[in-house]
Length: 95
Image (cartoon, rainbow, N blue to C red; front, side, top):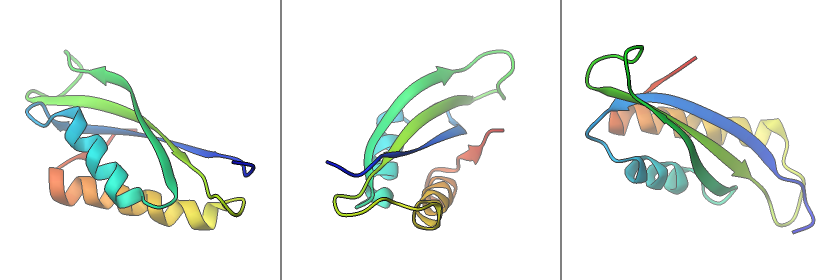
């Protein structure tokens, strides 16, 4: 692919019972066709995390086969991912 990749990170708090693979699958579904890769790079549960919750951080890679993506193209997809994780899995964004 000759067009550059664009990256976004997303950190969420989610119920401990929900598998990280389920979260990855939802992100991938919603992010198509611009989302190329979803990678879990941090998983944390401990004293600073609310009881029954865990923190997951994913690196998202967006890319188009035929053009350079703009923020105006990526941001709405990212917002839809956030909304879907919230409405379907009860996730909340971490700062």
